[in-house]
Amino acid sequence: MIYTLQKLIRAVQLSGIENPDSGTMDPDDIADRINEEQEYLASVVLHIRPDMLCAYWDLTTTGTREYGVVSGMPRYLDHVSVIEDVSGTNPMGSRVLRFEERFSYLTTLSANAIGWYFRGGKLGIPDYDTGTQLRVYYPKRPAPLFYGTVAAGTSTTVTFPSTPTVGELIPEDDVYNGMLVKLDDGQVREVTGYTASAYKATVDVAWSTTPTTDNVISLVSPIFPRFQEMLHLGAAIRLRAGSDDEINQIRFEYDRLMNQLEAFMGREQSQETKRVRKIAR
Image (cartoon, rainbow, N blue to C red):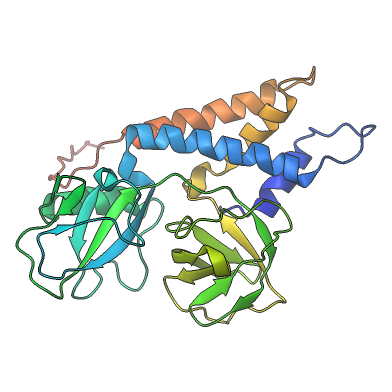
């Protein structure tokens, strides 16, 4: 399940962290703990497989051999994971890759990716003339989650609220690249560009229905859907850790999912032929 921040906050509340005699906890406080848990889970994933949480920027070659940092590039070029030639049809079809698709896709792509190197703070891409479109993937930590009312929208953009209902915006261009946004009508898109001064995000595929001020938009965690439950379980543990409340059941469920996550991340992906043993019945 893909959890929005609203659902994550509600799940934390339903876990019983709130004392009936103490009033309702501020949703921003719960969101802070959810974002802390997202940061922790991202650290686990990036430590094992840095290419599993990644954004990308598209570079059109100009005939030069080396490229310095420009808008849309990662802050540090040595974080590049793999580079793909997408000058023809996007091999993933109409959508950019996301979540578990990255596991098999980037592993396969690594064997066929183009060559590149680093020198003097620049990214070197030999053997490509002017006009070739390259897609450069790089690992990226998730931005803190938020939600609020849409300020404006076009067929391929959405303008975030300058003051979200819960959470805060980061005033940095392209900071949300690689993350998903979800409208309350169910539409989900990946952010491919962000202009901080205008609060405007560009999405990977045109909206089926253009966002309006009647919609609520949520930034969605890029943690794999099957493990997003850990976001609210971990947040509940963080909120209750300093009290005398019983958290063993929450911690048990969290540890179970963490073991699955580590096993999933450690799983080797191979395109080699597998041997199948026939068992007589």
